[in-house]
Image (cartoon, rainbow, N blue to C red):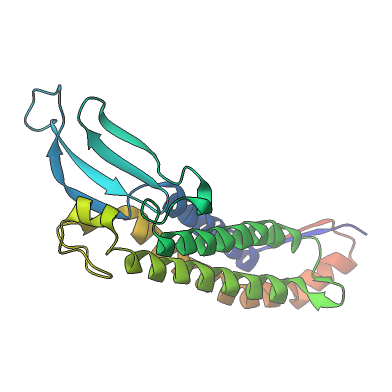
Length: 222
């Protein structure tokens, strides 16, 4: 018999996982990990609007160019095979780990929905398997956030932030919103792994079992 169980625990678990996944996706694709000093942009007359900040992410950057103006784009033109003088090795490793974490977390988003219909697979609790995957995902993204600052001594960063830039010291740059998105995403990922235990127990409550035994195909209990 097919039935769907929705409880407050499972709903919070799904929303927490989904928000964490979206935040990590934003950290991955946006070039706002390091924000450089303000620079003038050619062709803009207003003093307030003629100042833009160059920035860099894991594989993208935004910069003020002499004739083009303010331009954003990728710098990993050959992927992980890009020359390390262009794409620092530490950032390549960070790209691998954050992509791995994002992929795992995206799968768990689907698994949280699956638990509304099934509680186990191959004799194992889907909640427990999903929680383990979320912990691995959180650790993977955490490694990426540790590896990115290790590359702050690269020539690319020194051109943006000043020659004093070195690993874990951004010199004249400031940490951007993308980095904080990654941090919040990690916290929510670990929180989701903990909430999975509450979600599993709420799905196994006596009220839920009674409704299922009565033949209800849709069980919604706060």
